[in-house]
Length: 142
Image (cartoon, rainbow, N blue to C red):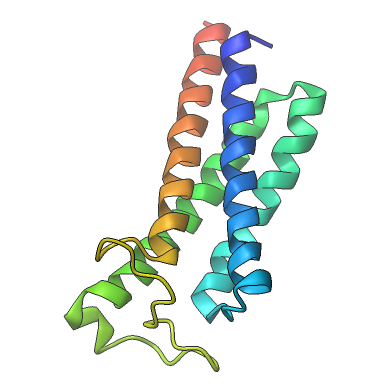
């Protein structure tokens, strides 16, 4: 495997590790109960960490296709979740989540950084890196 693919895979692993540990910090240490949309984002982020761990050990860059799919879906959920927190017209029509409202903001740093924002940034970084890896692998086959 090319060094740039190996480094990209390591970067995806690192981003997913930080996102996973961050979500666990908020729920287990800070005792912030995740809302329904937060759970969906976790369901998509946690496997990325496991998949890239195995892929890095196996030197398998083809996992980039899977991480691209997971991160695009997770990013879309994060974007929607962030929208219902910050945009009035979406907040009013937000679905009723379980015990914890999805419109709630446990953190709000600088007026725009919320938990879904952080998750969205992680998914975006993973998606960009995954598509970069796919492009590099296509270039190798030519």
